Structures are given as C-alpha cells and as structure tokens.
Length: 279
Ligand SMILES: NC(=O)c1ccc[n+]([C@@H]2O[C@H](COP(=O)([O-])OP(=O)(O)OC[C@H]3O[C@@H](n4cnc5c(N)ncnc54)[C@H](OP(=O)(O)O)[C@@H]3O)[C@@H](O)[C@H]2O)c1
Figure 1 (cartoon, rainbow, N blue to C red):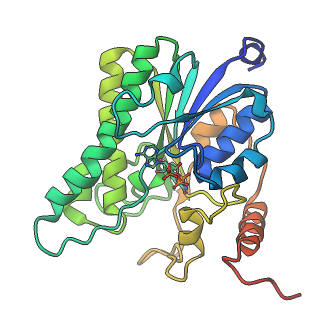
Figure 2 (cartoon, rainbow, N blue to C red; figure 1 turned 60 degrees about the horizontal axis):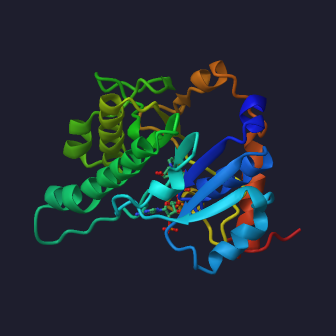
C-alpha cells in the first residue's frame, strides 16, 4: 500500500455519493490516494454536504457519469489503477398488474443493470491503465439453505442462490438478488474474455454512520418495523455469516456490533429519522 501511495495511485469510485461510495471516497482520500469520484449529477446541492465531509479534496476529481450511457466512464477511469464499482440502481419494487412480470424484470431491471456494468468494464478496457475492478455484490445472492433444504450453520461465498431458484421462487428480494447474480455473471464473463482482473465483494447489509445527507436505504430497511427477526422456521439459531475469507486476506475488524448500532442510531436521530433519545 505504501508503494501505491508513493506512485500516486488513483482509484475510481462509481456511485460516490451513495452510502458505501461516499465512505470509500473518504477513506481513500484519508489514505493519501488520488480519487476519481463519479456521480450522475455533479450539480446536485446535496453533493456540497459530502464535499464538506471529504478531506484531502485537492486529490479528488469529480466526474459526471451514468451507467446507462456507453462511454460515460471513459474519462473517469482514464489513468486509474483500480476501480471500485459501487453504483447500482437500488429501486427494485416491481408492481406489474397486467403483463408478464418476468419479461418486465428482465427488460426493465436486469438488462439495464448488466448493460451498465458492461459499459463501465468497456471503459476500463479502453483505459489500458486499470489493473483491477472490484464489483459490489450482495449477501442477497447467498442462501442459508443447502440443496436438500436444510439450514446451514455457516454461510459463505460458496452458498450462492441458483438463478433458476431465484426466478422460480420469487422469494422476498428476488429481483435484487437476480439482478446482482446476473450482473456479476455477465461481468465475470466479459472480464475473462477481455483479460480484466475482476473481483467481487459480497457485501453484507451495511449499517453504521453515514455521510449522505439522507438516510441510506439499507438503514431504513434495518430499522423499519417490518424487519425480520433473523429467526428461521424450525430453527432458533440464525446461520453464521462466515468472515473467514476476509480474515484470511488480512482484514481486521475495528468496530464491533455495539459501535455499529450506536452509530446507526446516532446518525438516524441526527437526521430525524428516529425520535430523540430520552434520558
Ligand atoms: N447498503 C447495503 O446494505 C448493501 C449491501 C450489499 C450490497 N450493496 C451494494 O452496494 C452498492 C452501493 O449500495 P449503497 O447502499 O451505497 O446504495 P446507495 O446509497 O443507494 O448508492 C447507490 C449509488 O449508485 C448510483 N447510481 C444508481 N444508478 C446509477 C446509474 N444509472 N449510473 C450511475 N450511478 C448510478 C447512485 O447515484 P444517484 O444518487 O444519482 O442515484 C448512488 O450514488 C450497490 O451496488 C448495492 O447493491 C449494498
């Protein structure tokens, strides 16, 4: 990492104004890297709030880029050593009263998600500088049930939901899971065919402090009254999400669950999403 800093390594973060993207930009700047941050609307006033939270702004360049426009990321990834692909459309509520829901999901959600990521990868290929692209996958692509329907005690990256199961079961969150699964599959296919070093990070549901001026959707879901209790039918102990691979790669956790809950609640109270806490 010191070597990369010395050579002024530059990283591109897509979706820089989102929950995860805004933290990535902050941490990369804090660590002394040059950052190319992409947003869809650089004129949005809400960006001013983030610009005030990101220190090291002399190493930051903002780019306007939209996943749905081919070539849109060409400038942003030019000269970058690595790309953190965090941007994704997070609107997945489908309400198809007349017509075929599968066709709707395929053409309105999955195809744009795949094309968006391929557009970014095409820009990376053109840049000739990008050494690695990190795709942001999701824990929603995993299942805690094994092929016989039994609950697993431990869930890790090998426990991927099958695409057929996601289409057929239409279980809660199926559209999001499918979009992530199929986008990841298409991204790996393109990367393998074109010699791009692509890795996928299976992100668990994110909580904790947020830099965004609005409450991120994952926190809204976690705090909402409809949240799941984590209890499984016929089983009182929730499956463990394995962090072995992360730890083996050298990752150390700095915050425990209490910190995360504390920060989530404190930020949500500050943003009036939760009422003030009475002492
Ligand atoms: N948060 C979690 O718990 C969680 C868990 C697992 C995986 N993930 C994954 O992590 C990534 C970021 O999640 P997040 O929670 O940070 O979401 P977020 O706060 O909603 O941020 C999403 C970002 O994507 C951008 N975006 C959406 N459509 C775009 C398009 N067509 N072109 C360019 N940018 C576009 C958004 O820009 P605008 O502001 O312009 O809409 C925003 O910056 C996503 O890929 C998500 O699937 C998140």
